[in-house]
Length: 112
Length: 114
Image (cartoon, rainbow over all chains, first blue to last red; front, side):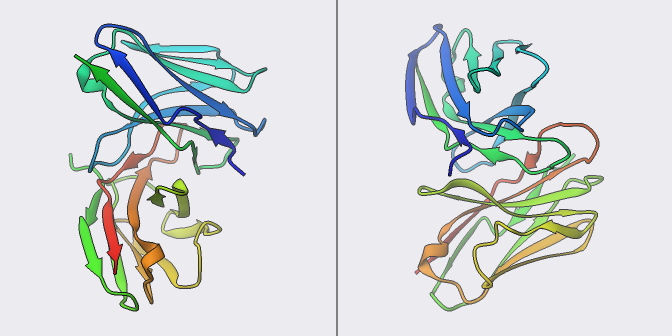
């Protein structure tokens, strides 16, 4: 039973345009969400996070939006750059738990 | 400052052999996690430690898998005997206990069991 779902395995975007990556979750106990980026042959690297008490968090070109009622979050990248091409993982955690539950990932390709 | 270090980066072995994967967490981090990434199951948590003590090993698939953390700077994940379905990329990650900051991942070990 997947508690964190990324339904789009891949996304292609033109350089300079906005990339929107989506993530849905089912466990209402999740109260903290993270996005990781992964390049081939490397481990995932932390990108941005958001607490459930917020609905938006911004860091440079990256913004994460959280819609608790819909159990949905999204990552916006504006403007997209070719170096952003990677697999993006959504992850969630709850309470004092230290473990992360990951989605299956979305391969983003930014075309020059 | 070195990140999480894993060795070996690649391991090819034959079915039935013992495999040992190694991890050195970031100094000062008191949580250590072992993950496995496969096409079928994605990135899944196998086990995690706090202050060298295993806290949750519910993700360990079978008794063939075992993990240890003898001290704060070293952990091993052992598979004995290995099977072809164990082929995957194994990641180690660490984090500092306070706050909700993300975990820091190592580069992974790509295991192939023939």
